[in-house]
Image 1: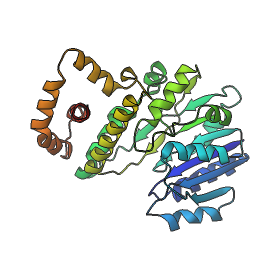
Image 2: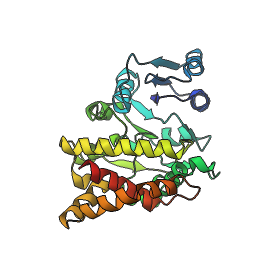
Image 3: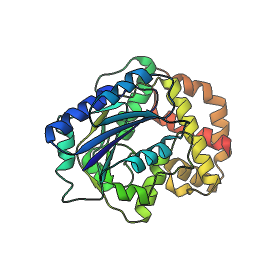
Length: 293
């Protein structure tokens, strides 16, 4: 029936496993929960306790694989026909989370995405940027997602037939942070694999501070630069590089570089404040990308 796959890195995933196990047991389904750590420095002892739970396993990779390759390895080691990819720092909103998915398997057997939400509790000042970004840019209504079926799907809270993932694996050439989801979704779009959007969200409890989130975003931009340079994706496939391409046609990249360089610290001051401006964050990433080019 169902293999629940949880890639983890430096996070205590035991509460998530316990909740999923409780729901699966109540449904009486055949299942397994596989947690695979990508060489973390934290929470190994907490997560090792997962091995004491029936139908649940926890293991640590011998080397850091990156998210895409880690998920592919989880899939290849799974036993059942359907796989549900989870995010370590998220929890189901509903006590019927698994039931909502299972009820759809007989009528829709390709890919189902349940969406993502963020807590309404405002975090401390130093964590506002990630929270605000999540609410504004990642948490989309079902109606919006239905109109943009391939644009707002993440590499988690994703239920699909195992054979689909085996035939269309996550890109293993992406070793650093960023854009695995975009490359994966392009593969699905090109191969005309349909995605069903439903309202069955995970609450994402990402608690990154603003400085770390900015650094991760820079890393993602570096990844995007490498993907385009190596012809693994095209400018038009990603909003950031698409905007860059348009500005380049009008010879405006030089202006972007000057504004970015002169105002970088002021922008960072805003992004780490208690009221970060997401449009400034967009420009920061555009400026950072322009410098790479």
